[in-house]
Image (cartoon, rainbow, N blue to C red; front, side, top):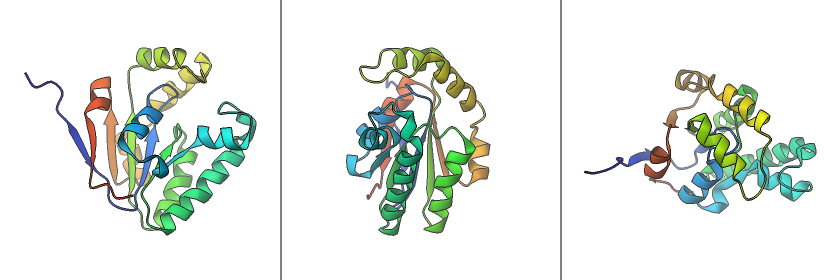
Length: 178
């Protein structure tokens, strides 16, 4: 009895890895487990630095401007960069893909497509910022439009979709050089 097989994902040097999923899906937890913290650009962390905390939506524009500047700097240095934001809107992904293309970087999407009941329960049980449930439900609805063919058509060279806690636990990154 082997359990869940390990999923191995190769991330080429200098890639942009975009974590896609609603609040509470486990993006930050996954990023912390799989990637060095210096490689992760988090919209929540930038909101906290610029504004009054991770939930300060009044500084979202400034936070993403800072995220995009940091991404440009890292891509210029050919450093693999992980984007920890919902990235559910096509425009949000487009801004990241534009920068990846400009630097000939591979775009990797890791989609956290967990069952809604798990996402809602995780969000409600967060120790820190709890996103209002109607907002998470809107994000879950947006996620339905983020299909693998859509992501491929947008320009993601690699798409890894995680549908369960077992998928999250099994994912391993290979050949990562930040």
